[in-house]
Image 1 (cartoon, one colour):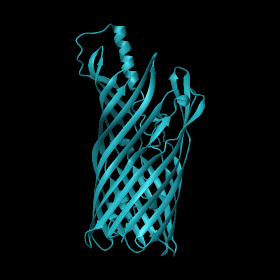
Image 2: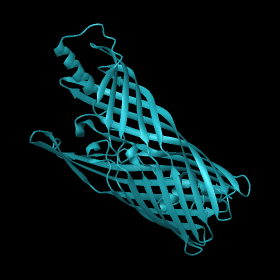
Image 3: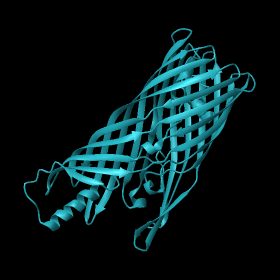
Image 4: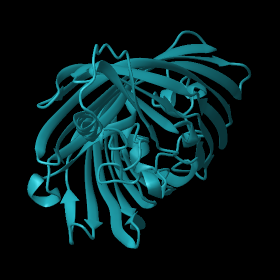
Amino acid sequence: MLVSRNNKSRGRWPKRKEGSMKKVIVGALLLLIGCLYAGGWDNEVMGVRQLGMGSIFAGIADDATAIFYNPAGILSKNLDVIIEGVAQLPKHSYFSDALGKTIYSKKNSIIPQLFFTYKLNDKAGLGLGVYAPYGGGVVGWKKEDLGMLLESGLAVYTLTPTLAYQLTPNLSIGVKGNIYYGFVMQKKDTLIGTITDTIDVDAKGPAFSGGLGILWKNDKIGIGLSVRGPAKIKLSGTYDSKQMGEHDIDMEFNLPTNILFGIGYKVTSNLTLGIDAEYSMWSALDIFKTTVKEVTTPLGTIDLEQEDTLDFENIYKIKAGGEYTLGNGLALRFGAAYDKYSIPDKSLNPVNIDVDKYVVFLGLGYTVNKVQLNLSSLYAMGQKREVTEEVAPGVTITSKYNLNAFVIGAGIRYSF
């Protein structure tokens, strides 16, 4: 929906010119929203060790990445410092009857991560994490493939202070705050009638949320439950258009509540297995609001507001994995997961691609004294989605979407 506010015009143009200008204004905003980040918004590749194990950690929770998975688990070490980088190498594919061919987008990104925990005494500890729980990647289509330049990305980083307390020898609780800072960018060409426009959007802004966790653990079994609360994020920045000039822009959208339950089991002194079940309430992302401010038109100076209905769906994920330690400091890691899509058919488009994915994980670790080196990877195999829509009476267009991804991470850990 598009509406205008703050109309400061003192007169009116002829009706035909007014209608033409409205088309230009509306057209300049088309595809701005709903074209944000491909492959879904979740980014749960936290911790290179966990990446090798299938990202299962709610019930194991024995290093500083528990800040993300289950804050009740940050008490396992007196001091734990983890510094890592994760490279995302996705391959998006898009086919449309209108194009008559399948095109591909390959935009890689590197996301840094930092986790730190410190045990204050026998019962209490604190931690701090810096990571990107949402987005973090870019999708881009070449002009010669899509017929226009189209590049878009979204990332939400967080600074996460955490506290945990040991209630009994086997039971601990934890709380955390999520201080989010989000970024949205988009570059695109658009053709409205005979008018060619190039649009460049850059916006950023904060949001706040919280989370809590509980962990019961003995020498063999760990059972954990954690909740990450919802947030409303508001971004501000610039909207730069060759036809409309540069204007301030505001964006607003919701982030979901996330519930994670996990069980870890130490089969032997060398083998640990785990399984996590996750439920994400992505239905919170129903509307994405945008306002381009003080646009001068023949109708006057107006604010252009757009509300895009996304209607994301609640999803679940099942993940399983393990770690086998050898006597020489080596650790072998493995895992598998099923990742359900959250984006409905009507919200799919070339830069908002999400599909069901089957994921396999592999990892390797080497520990010497207080230092651990980790290297892990995953491969996500997407399941193609096909959507047919009626664009005119009796006229339909079929589109096909898919996403495969390779992720590799490396990191170093110091703990005692």
